[in-house]
Amino acid sequence: MMGGRTRRPERQGLSLDSLMDILTCLVGVMLLVVIFAVLEARGANVRMRMPLVREPPGDAERTILLCQDRGLRLLDFDIAVERLLDDPTVHDGTLDYDGVPALVERANERGFSDDYFSYHLDYREWTDGGWWKSRSYRAVEVVIEPREKQHALDELERNPDVFASLADALAARNVWIAFLVDSTSLDVFRCAREICVNRGIATGWDPVSLEFPYRQTVLGGGGGGGDDEKPEGNASTVQF
Amino acid sequence: MATLNGKESQPVTLFPMFNILICTLGVFIFVMATVAMISLGVGKSIILTPEYLDDAADEPAKAPRYIEWTGRDLVLHPSRDRVCFDCDIHSIRTYAETYAYIDGALVGSPLDSLFTALSANREAEYVVLLVRPSGFENFMDLRGYIEKKGIDFGYEPVDQEWTLRLR
Image (cartoon, rainbow over all chains, first blue to last red; front, side, top):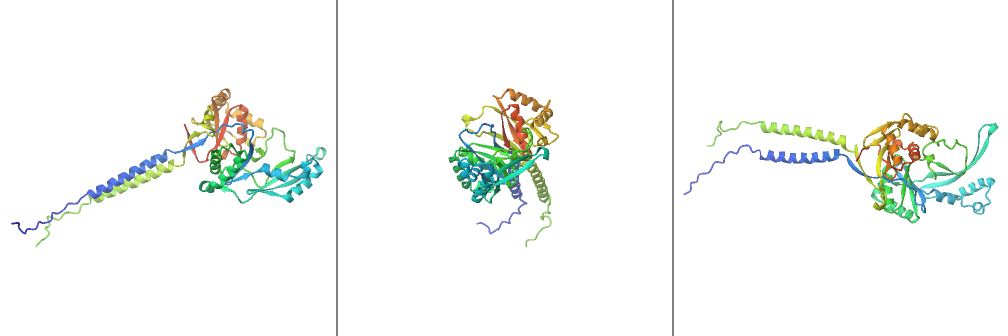
């Protein structure tokens, strides 16, 4: 017969199993952190375009995309000039020097602006040199001023369809795109170029920063230094 | 009656507590070392891998040689041989004087030898100019110089804070 003896519970010693579990987990986490740190410290790998400068496609027209102040705008300069100088005196060949101020006036009455810029003409006359050797000059300049619309990096990354539709429209016009890029807009430029290249549009870029209102001479001009003398600023080196 | 015998009572040992403390200290040191390692490494080193704009069939068969332009310095990669200009080359009045100045600054440098070799070997190699934003303002002057040398070239912008590692 089994006795009714009750076994005294054995006194348990201090168990270190839980501590071992915690230490094991800790070592595992530390290993993960070490792997992450080593990968990060090795540096980022960036795939970068290494283009060779070539002649632009002969049958394509140049179109400018201005990447400035962290945004991107289409600078459709040729279209703007064409529209501003769309005047009867230009078409029938009766435009002379004296008729230029009236031409400018008529162009500015019509005005021209697109989504990104507004354009108007300005007529200037000036003399250069002393009284003994003065020369008179006159010029018609296109004055370009930015409007509010631009494509920011955030938009290009999150909703690329908006710019992609513009790129599709440009591709249909058989153009090649010249990006003018300032020092703050490298990411915008890279993102936009990727979209254009994926659509088979030839691209190039130049480092340029324009100060607005930007003036570009389209008729006349003159003065300045010799042929080898440099223009001021990097914007002056770009031919629209 | 159950009584607790004084001999059976275990003394409180502090060894596990010391272990935990030492482990905690070790983890703190480890975390600090990791943070230091990451802050030294992240965003500072960029490994550039060439990617060509054109189709693979149209990919230039030439080998790129990399030169970084900061606005004052020309740095040849990956050797990091450097030529520093004393002045802003855009401030020189004419292009002819600018090109003569650059010629003078390069004399005897590895870049001079490279340009000479590239002029004679246009079929096999070309120069990729990696332009920092600090070099945007006077890049056209350098570009004119390279064109005048008759060297095939391309150019790409690189961020100011990138430390370049080129293979």
